[in-house]
Image 1 (cartoon, rainbow, N blue to C red):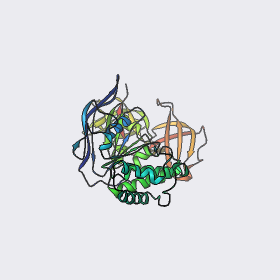
Image 2: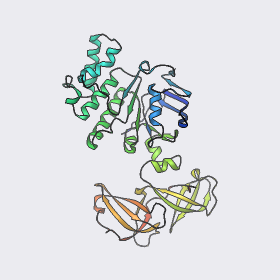
Image 3: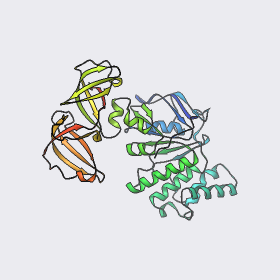
Image 4: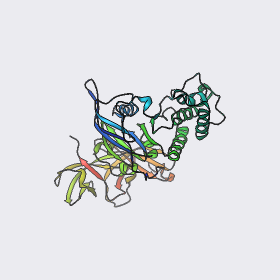
Length: 368
């Protein structure tokens, strides 16, 4: 549901930012340019630095080195409340004694806007988030999704230059989370609002983002569209972190300009050389293959691996088959078969052969 961002103007520019806490380097010379009107997601495992980075954007933390620009202006020394940033917290942080209307109006009152202007803007934004008629309810009288809408309205009503979202969907159940993701993206697109979204949920990042920045150990490993990140990961970490992936040992059989052919089992597959460094023929490498890039063999096909069925997991539109394989370090391979009719075809313990459903894949040097 990501839309192409036509506006290439830079709304937020982070340049060479470093942040340490004692002996721990939370951010290491991190740079990131965010375009006007796009939704940029910071994605990574716990402790990767994404929340530290969000807090620097918000002004809750200051960088040890580097600088931050918003709309072309340096804001390193500008306090949080003067940065024209709206923030939606993970726990919503609503005032329990205030009504929905009071919570939304709070930021405007602090800015000492005229009462008529406050009333008009609060009414507009409550309508935008579909809370007309709930103005007089307190947070305890609202559902989780309605509380989230109040928090979003409070962030939007000040008309921020940048909207910051700190894992806002984590407290919602699956169905409500999905519907709120769609609503937030629709609102963001309608307003053309530059948005920075923090999450550790890959599916959220892939479905919501115009672009995303994958982080690890205080560094941004890759920035790109969801399609670019998923299909063309920049390194071994990104390839293993985004989506499900099987890591299968292989051997380089031949090398040519731009590509190599690697052999695994009885099968051969082409891989780009860009990730392989200075490998030579016969070098052992790791082949990274998505579950949907494998299938179960028909008669006389060049098998990749042999194993036995450990489990079948019916997922409605597809079936995941988990196969025990002795020849690989992770011990099992995940094969994703399309269509509901696949479920139940193979009993646990059944011998099974796996083949490629693709002609090209990705390979990386084996981890030391």
